[in-house]
Image (cartoon, rainbow, N blue to C red; front, side):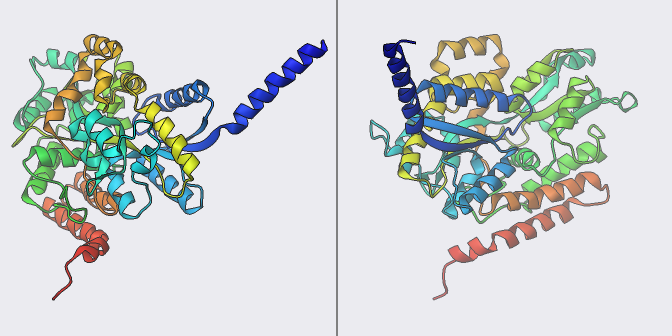
Length: 437
């Protein structure tokens, strides 16, 4: 090699090394909350970002489900290694902000070149239905990344065989349709609702409570839930009756994997699952026609917003805040967010994603993806309380007892869930109570 070529090669090597060393390294935690190939796709997104610029190096850390992600992010922060950015279940924002575990988003947005505030960015660019879960006491602590609502997946082939012309629009119709689809001698069920305590049960139940005309929690006060209200007890009774009275759903706790497996086998007529599972569902429902519909109404049409926001944990450096802002901006750009929506089935919370030609073409080719957007006009915020996970599980444990034990009553379940939740929230209730004069 000539002396000139050697010098040139060394110079290029040093330039490359200096660039690599100059990159600000940040940790990014992400879950895979629904079935599918989300982990591989997110790994691809991270790689593309890292290759697209020379300022930030993102280390992706897969963290399991939403609950596990919260625990791992909190543990890393307490150990002095806070993640710069986390895809966090949107209803954990309140609890994390109350405990000062996460930063107000303005700590990142001070590095925005246009000087836009996080609040203005949120309100201007994202669907109104997702604003509430991103804010705490009017301050923005999260930026929505992907969102979902529960929807009704149904086997159109089984519907046609049973002479059912359309999906149910009311609870009464749901029971009627489920009965026509149930054939226990052949192991075929009319409907399945997820009842696990990893949030699917609470999310589904809270949606049905709102459809029954009630509220699952106080959206303006993190220390109050309505587990023993008439509307919640009525919803628990409806759920219980699907198992023991109408016999259109099997007894016992059902998780999303069981439900999807039954659905793919052609032995399940209807399944209530996340819109975020749409990509997984359409990939695996190969032997019959699958369709989706809005959830049936009781007193009103209603769904609960689910999904996740991007949050940043307290304790990161200013350089990490700047790097986190750059990666956040990339993730919620219309192009990247729209692509993630098309891959997963989550609807994009970034409104401008739907102005892109790729998104318009996607909705034409698969109109099923429109259902989540159509449900937004009926959407309510996800329940968010002090100690959200424990408060949620107080009810989910009772729901599990209700579907496992034919002799366990709705009154017992609702009372026990309320007592447990109040016990968990008591420190916050006490801290916010007015002192006696």
